[in-house]
Length: 515
Image 1 (cartoon, one colour):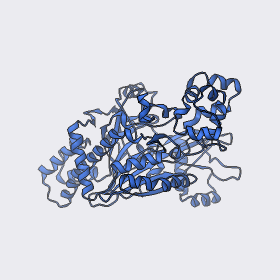
Image 2: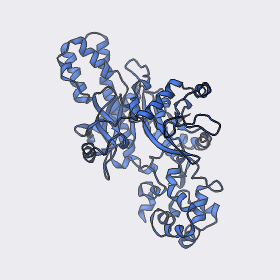
Image 3: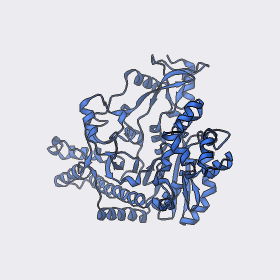
Image 4: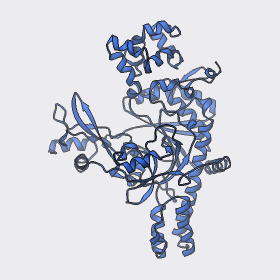
């Protein structure tokens, strides 16, 4: 199945035949569903902050900054925005009769009726020559307008990544998600030395676009916020690409007979995250941004969640340092086990409580000597799905887990019922501590659960194939981290999944609500 020539190709990608064979075995055997036991909820896995505790935790974060903690903002920003424009591509590729129907209702009608409310409308008006304030003219030229928005001979929005698209009107400027992350970084991710570190993961063919915007806009934001930015980039590593296979699980090959590899999904970015050196790392998706005037809740909760990380990480470090000094007696060990159980919400088996001091020390070290993350969780306001659960993790022990819908067997009525009772969902709002109590960086790859990957059906050049996605960055790739869930308000979650999301009040200029 794997020839000597294949081995040369595999080696050139920085991976190994053994890894490829293991991937093929995953295709053959599939991945098990996550065994969820119950949803996490307020008081049972999710922390709810009142006004006083928000201020208290914010003080912990600011004290950490004063103690020269380093901060980095990690922004997954790879890939083109094609899914954002799916309905629009359907529209321009349809026949004339279907196009007229689409203009009468649904997303195309909404887009055209409000085309002048998008931040890119001036650019679009200039390139089409259509008066976008004239609704009749807009609908008469709908196909032209949408084509010029999407395609190579226009604004190229259907080709470009989300990060470089104009999302918002701010201070009479059109701003991109890149700029919104620069603003956020300055407002909650600035070090004690006025340095703002932001790392974007990008695809190789889009990095120049990112750099062009950053280089043009950086002086503006450095002057506005009196900070110095340190912007870095990385691409998804070729070694994390996964093999594609045919329906019979044999390697899928291109016309030249070479094995076809595909990007391994956002879980591959655990490798990129593993290369970041900072005491506190904020993670937030590229498209989850708000105009600057709407950032009050976001900043408040980002600082508070970072404070939760600092507070509990401090407790973990104190315990580990005490164990290293060999000064802890049985009373101390029992109090540490109580902290693990009640504050860190890590299950402590009854037999550990009755064990010898040596066994207690081993258990405490094992449970605490891990990276730690604080995950913001938003209340469900629609259909419940993936989010915070108590699930069986990497070592067969029940722990707090971020679980995606695809990891749950929804054909199992018991699991389906558990999902229906979930109260919160995962907005990808993480603050991570990746160093140990000695200041040494953890190897994050050691804490991935390899059994949490995903197989999907794809096609290439009209031929069906099966693709393998690696354990997701915020679920399987962090499965074995110390995990704390904290409720955050829906106002902090403003993703742009379709273009018409930009018409929601959260993404419109402040003055638009006054008319």
